Image 1 (spheres, one colour):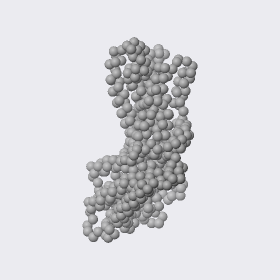
Image 2 (cartoon, helix red, strand yellow):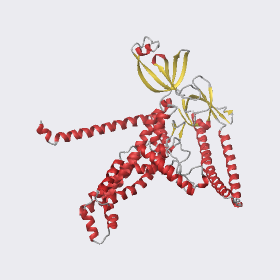
Image 3 (cartoon, helix red, strand yellow):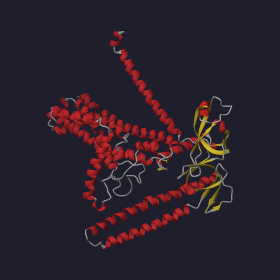
Image 4 (cartoon, rainbow, N blue to C red):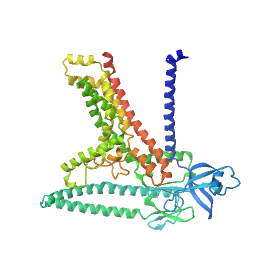
Length: 548
């Protein structure tokens, strides 16, 4: 037995088994997240329930969100009268009844014994709104310009009106967030210039006053146009019958989409599922992040990682080149290497505190004093933002890039350097033209590890720039186009916020899985892009390595 253990075969099989177990575990987690996340967008059926309550019978329109088995003994101990048909166990249904502004709760729990009937009605519609979540009801009419439409209202008519409302909503959004925002930015800039003259005890030039008057007039005209559009947009209503049979007016300007899940065929459900996923990745969040999409979080995550990569790569490569090529082999160099390795184990929240104190308050505060004194006390760079978040994560991932690059430089034989310098090249030329290109796959490996860690960090970002909801993207059409001082949204923080800070936990729980799946997808995509570049560089310089 000991002879067999001394051979390599048992250890090879043990290692392979552990690797397989890890792969199965990772695959299982990914499948769970994927199933829970993608199922969130499937158009589930909406039932009409007849439920027995203490007050009598009650009608519910609802979607079954979850089913759990409950012991009858447990129910009896809680004082619940158990029906003779359910003496052992019975199911308890978690039903989403929606209609948030008309119901006390979004969800109700109903025992199986209290359900008198459960019917799939083809005329029950799911109405997605900009406010108060979805609405479950039966469309029965339409009000146009305050008057009820006196004709047969078909589902196609509703779809046409919803499309018109979407076009009006797009026009309002374009006017508000493009034209008005641009004029408002110009007006604030010229007013800041006027204040600078006042602070210097100088009279405001006439051209500045004229510019303020022109921009103010243009702003007022755009505001008037915006109010006109909003007024015209608020005159149409959907008439929907709720679970109690009451006719409810649903403002059309709040309706995003409407579908009949119980009347859909398989292909129609699949199309609706794909459409909902597309909207999830392209729209802005609503209802305290518990509804809507996550496009600002995707954009902020990718932009921050790209900026971090641009910052950390030259810093890490220069540090590794100095340590390996120029620094002497002494106690101080060994101490520096030990410090670099130990920095990789520092908790990320410590980097966040460092970024807040050094980058935000010290560096950003001094930048404001030197270049943005006219806007003080309102800070520009002296507040958490995209630039400081990227720099903080660059410092956090710097040890990984340094170690990986230095390992790559170590693998290059000294004969390469000596041969290059023997042909007349300087040490700098040898590094730039020979050594660094050959070490580029190792540099990309370090960058891959840095991206994998930085994209999923949340704790330091909470201190140096990430927010629950950002008013605008860091990249827009206004000069200088990329606004590094703005706060941004992040997928990791979105998962934390929806999972632990949402006012409606049950409704937000599937959204946690969907956002987690999206975060993993973004990280994998960034890593695959870096891996493809590394493989290209490896193939490019493989012939040179073989010749040497």
